[in-house]
Structure formats: C-alpha cells, structure tokens
Length: 564
Image: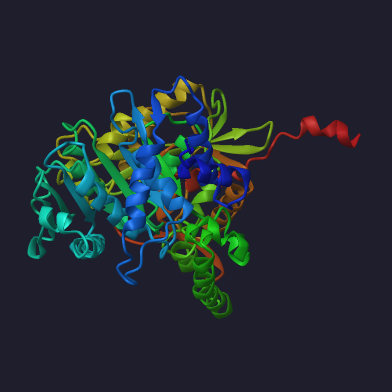
C-alpha cells in the first residue's frame, strides 16, 4: 500500500532544513509542527488524510482571473492542511484561531476564499447551519474575498450539477446558501448594523491591519462562545498602526512561537523580512513573498517589485511604504517617528529598582485628560538607566467615551496595574491620587530620590500640596523648549538605540513611544504627536526626568585603579 504524501510535514521539513528560505517566525512555526507531531503527550494528533482532503479540494478550484486550476505553493498547503489536519481525541479541530500574514499579491485572499468555500460545501462543525463570515473593516473590503469565493463557486457550478443544485446565491445580500444543510457564506463588516447576534462558526477577518480597534474581532468572537469548534482567522499584510489590534496580535504571536506564551490553539504563519537590509538581496524576498516558491511566480514578483524598490531608493522618498507593502514589515506611519519601536521594544526587561538613585518626571496634563509620572532609575554599576512609569486617567465626559476616542482600553490597563482611573465624581484628575502613588512607590522600593522634575504647566496647585506634605526632594522646573529639551531628547534616543536605557513592560509608555514624532526646528529636536487624541504624556514625563538624570555624574572610583 502506497504511503500517503504528507504535504504539510514535507513543507515544514524543507523550511527547517533551509531548503526553502523563510522568515524566522515561519521557521519556528514549522519547527512547532514537527515538534508537535513527535510529541506523544500532546492532546492533539495530525490527520494527514484530512489535511490532504482540503488541499485536494483547493487544487481543483479555478483561479478566477485565469480560469485555470490553482497551483498551490507549499506554504498554502501548509496553512490549509494545518488548520484542517490537527484534531483532539474528541474529533474537534485543534486550531480555533489563526494569524496569517504575508506581502500583497501572494494569494492570501484566494486561499481564504477557497477555505471558506470548502467549509460551506464540506464542513461538519456544526453539521448544519454553519455561518461563514468573510469580514473586514469596510463592506467593500469584505466584498473582495466574497467576490472571489463567488467566482470559484460559479466555476464549480458550471461543471457540477450537484453543487449547482445544493447552492443558492443572493447577490444583493452578498450571501451564498448551502440548501442541503442551511449553511451560509456572508460578507460582513464593521459597518454592518446586524453583525451582533450572529454565530459565525468560521470567521475570517481580512486586512486586519486597518482596524483601529477590536470591535469586529470581539463581536465575531462573542458570537462563537457557544459553539463547540469555531475558528477565527486573521489574515492581512503588515501596516502602520502600531497602536492597532493587529500589531498587538503580532507581538503576541512572537511569544507563542518562542514558547513564552502557551497557546496550543493558535496557528501562526507570518511571512516577513527579518531585516530591512534584506530588501537589497532578491534571494531573501521569498521570506515575505512565499509564493516565490513557485518558479513562475518568483520571476513575476521579482519583475514587479524590483522597479518599485529602485524608484524608492533613487527618489530618496524612503523605503517605508515598500517595506510594508512588498516585504510585510511593520513600520510607523511617519518617517519622522521619534523612535523606531523595535529599538524600544528590544530593551524591555525586568530589573531590580530597590534602593536605586532615581529621578522622577511629572507631566500634569489637563485636569480632564491624562497625567503621567515616570521614574528614571540609575544602574550605577553598568552606567545604565531603567524606566518605570504610571499614568492617571481622567473620566470627565465618561470613561467609555474616552476609551472610544483614544482607542485605549484604560479599564483593562487599570486592572493590570499600568494606570489609575480617577476616583473623583467630577472626572478630573485627583492630585492626591498622583502624589499618594509617588509617596507609596518611593517608600515601597526605598528609592533614593535625586530630584522631582516637572513641567510648570498646571503645576501650581500641586506644588502647594507637595509643600504641605513637606517632601524633602529637590524640585526642578523643566521648561518646555528646545534650549532645555533638545539635547536630552537626542541623547535619550541614542541611548535607547545603544541599549543603555531599558524599561519595564508598560503598554501606555509603549503607545506614547509609537505616537511621538520628532520635529526639527532651527537645528533643535523636539517631540510632538501626530494627532490631538494621541497620547505621549508618559514619554514626556520620562524625558523631564531624563533632563536631570543624563547630567548625573557616575561614581568612577572603581575605575581609578586601572589608571594607577
């Protein structure tokens, strides 16, 4: 009896062995498949027959543009086969969520439309009345995947009387019905008023990088809670919104692949360049353009991408747009971003702040907005700086309204300890909460406070309260202007890049870093935000503290013997 070919494992081995060049994330994803296949204690098994069944179905489908049968790349077989091949002992699929990302024009929409069609015609979870949602942020975007699914279905209907008799198309509603079991494919979006209340057993979010919030994700997920074996697939290219929900997922999948976060039910495939320098090496482009695995597609994609790269380089316009679109790399919207977020994130670590010499920065924003306090701790042995921070959230006008305006879930962040929501009925910042936090923080960690640095804006009432509390700390006014801030702002950025400034995990400080734009005025550098609603307060509080911290004279006694 001939051995059944295992396309999924075959692809995984080729990637891990280096026969197919892939991104670091996808090497880890393939290694995960191989490790799991050999793990007898894992409560899941890989069913080659079921994996091959969907692969065979997809290869029977025509390409809507050419009418020819699809020629699947190994990566497409890996994705579809993995999602349809892993099961637990009860017969339920292992993966209930998937993150699939690659550069544009790599057949991702064609793949998901085929998988949606497979579930409509051959799905079993549930047996009847499956609801397959092709969703996106706009109805037009959702319609792209639907139209592709429809084109594939029409091609099948033209050669299969059975499929024709069991399907009904309602163009006005962008809906396809399986009349045998009453299952449906629907195009839905954030714009759809009736999205709530639906139980999508198979939900796909296309181009999720455009989402400003988690609304569509949470709505779809809520509708799945009573289903035994639902799946939600995020499929998208990278984008520019580093404060958006997809970038949050992007950071999370790293933890899954590194084994830091345990999530056996989350499938990951992320095709991206590992370094922007790879743009200049055509041989590496397959990392973000996995369709280049097919020789004819490699030739076509190279021919189309090369001129765009050359134009961007020659014109001096920068590669930002190219890196996002053609190489699936996340980049801030503005080339004027104060810090590359990757430089910042690599310095996230835990550290002991007990007894450290500390400079405190206080940014008192409007009474109805956000106040931030940051602590710059000195590591005197290594001559490094460590940043911790905390924010205080006003609720004037309602907390929910503020959450919606800022696209920040302050309630969740408060529960996690990253911020404090004002306890005043008026909704304005409670100064006592701020000062009590500072006192308690200093006392808890026995901090050796060198100075408390503040922006003179809105400080007057607070200074009076500090004096009443008889704080012994040196109070330093930090004037907002290039003369005071330009050099510290430049130095802070340089030290972050060099790894000399490290920080605790703090989502609000991360958001501030991502929002900050560098403005060059008369050969001086200042920090601004792109939009009024965007928050940079935790960063500014940090900079205020750093103005004094960067002038700290390190103890050099231990170095003296070297020069004697």
